[in-house]
Every structure is written in structure tokens, then in C-alpha cells.
Amino acid sequence: MGETIISYGEMIWDPETYDAQRRRLVPFFDLLYGAVGDLVAELGGAQPVVLDLGAGTGLLSAAVIGVVPGARLHLMDGSGPMIDRAVSRLRAHVVGVTVADLTDPLPVGPFAAVVSALAIHHLDDEAKRNLFRRVRSVLVPGGLFVNLEQIVGPDEETTQRYERMHERWARGAGSDDEEWAGALARMAHDRCAPLDDQLGWLRQAGFGSVDCAVKTWRFAVYSGRAR
Image 1: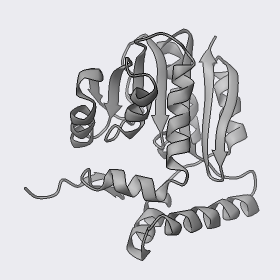
Image 2: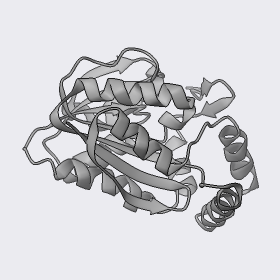
Image 3: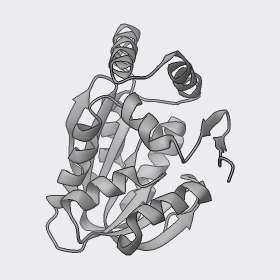
């Protein structure tokens, strides 16, 4: 069987190699992904229903299941083949699947938690704000939104420092010239925003207890609770 290559505009992902690439290209992978699971676990409850936005191959949902083994998952992604791989990985935990982009209507829910990893930065700022409002609308009162996101710094000097450190860590994890060049080509299309801006947009969308739990240079895990 030939490779299944998924293209999002100029971004190309192969579901067969995606997971290994993600581990090389995301510094402190286990800390960042694990923090999302830990935050969902803080909600309590044995079987929270969790919506994963931009679920990809299910890496983030797997991290949630690792901490909350009874969680029930609704996976949403624009790529059917990527979701198919996620369903294969998570199987009994999956209670719903939606093949759609982040600008499309969200599943109705309601959900105890909505999580996302490295997907929302593909949207422009207004679309991010709109998505945060829509996420708030599908959460139960007190429900949790957690986003593992790629950010820019508050100024150009800081952003350049983030970029240098990202390459340093990726190279140390085994990323070669070809893979890093591909990562740079994909990131050229990203629409990242400063962390402070995104925390402010959460508050404007009706979230309380807004906080950044983990930040490692250009990667951050932040969250808010639906009021």
C-alpha cells in the first residue's frame, strides 16, 4: 500500500510518520502533552466527554486517556485519514467523530472539556477569537478548555530567541536538515499570536481561571474554565 499524504495548503503530513516527527519537533513533548491530560484530570469525574479539536492521529487524546482512562472522546479534524488513524489508536474511547475544519460548526456537545494541540495557530486572530467563543458555547458550566499552542514572543527579539531554541532542541532530538527545512516551510504559513493576547481573548470569550500551566519557549499550554 502506498503512502497516504495529507496536504493542508502548503503543509504536508504523512500519517505514517507524523507521530515520530511530532516528538522530534516539539521540545519537551511529554511535559506539554501530559500537562493537558493533567488539567483534564483536575476536573474530576470518571468519564468526562472530551472534544479534541484538530485531533490528528490522536496524540493529544492518547495523553488525556493516559491520565483519565475513562474519558470519552469526540475527535474533530479536517483530514479523514488522520482521524482514521486516531480512531484505530483510541478505539473504545471514541464516542464521536467529525471531519471538519476549525472554522466549521463544532459538535453540539455539551462537553466537560475541549482540548487542542498545535492546530489553532493555523487560524488568523479573528478566527481564533471566534473559535474561543464557540468553544465556550459547547462546554458545560465550569467546563475546561485547554490549548497546547505555538506562540510568538511579545517582540521580535524574543520571537527570534524562541526560533533559535526550537531548532536547538529539535536538532538534539534527531531532526535532520531535510526534516527541519520541511518544518520551517510549514511554520511559514502559521499565524501564531503572543501568549498574553490569547489569554486575553479567552477572558473576553467568557472564560475564568485563565492560566498558562506550562511554557517552554515558543510552546505553551494554557486553559480557561467556562463561566
